[in-house]
Amino acid sequence: MLARYQDGYLPLRKTPFSWTGNVGACTAGDTPLVYKNAVVRLVNYYRAMAGLPSDLTLSLAKSAKAQQAALMFDANDQLSHSPPTSWKCYSANGAEAAGKSNIAWGTLLNSSDGKGAGIGSISLYVMDGGVDSLGHRRWVFSLPLGEVGTGDTPQANALWVLSFDRTAPSVPNGVPWPPRGYVPWDSGIAEPTMRWSFSYPGADFSAATVTMKDDAGAAVPVTGITSLPNGYAENAVAWLIGGSGQPWSRAPADTKLSVTVSNVKVGGSAKSFSYDVTFIKP
Image (spheres, rainbow, N blue to C red):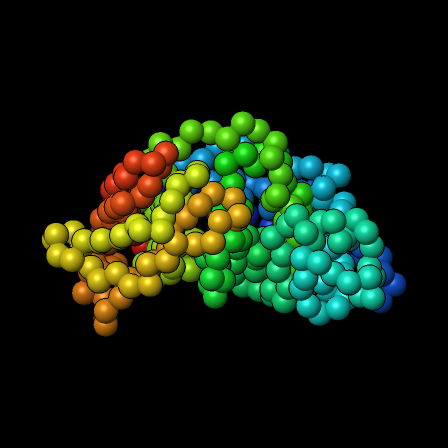
């Protein structure tokens, strides 16, 4: 995990960005192929940690439409999955991509931590702070997703993720985030104080409960357990660690937290899922 963080994640975050477009002229332009591939590799990095196939491929056709969407977001200084025809730089292809993509605007270009356009937006989608549905995260981890498109300008990204290109893989243990096993304690990947989630295809989480324990077996308070709205890739439940302070933290040493998600209805039967997450300071 540390090796992939150091030789994969960190270099990808520093991928140089350039763009041949022009907002004033409504020219969508393009980004280098190496940049597009870096965006896809970064998505695959997160999917690998989530225990999902990490072989997503780049679609240049979808990327061309996503580029039109990113141009619209940049030109209008706002986001919409259904942009009106009155928008500056409107195009039908861009509107199509806006409706099929995770979208972000206003990320910083070429900052010291590598945020900017697609590279900066992927971590925003996975952390998904302030988004009640956690829909961006759930689409990044969509089971039938096989190829993505990315459109990027200095201020905007459209990541085409509403694709159903493969037979969904079996995930008998569900898809948690933060993921089971070791995970870097990094604000762009996962933190204990983030909103946790657990997804399972077709599951009913309406009566699900969540309990957590620290490495000494002491209960970790859990709050905000919510069955998330369906329709954003796989069904899911979300929660937060509650209480005051961080008595469960062992930082800078490894911090292990155990999770049990109970009373998940799968095919009419109640199931429980238990797993451990160990945060490591890279």
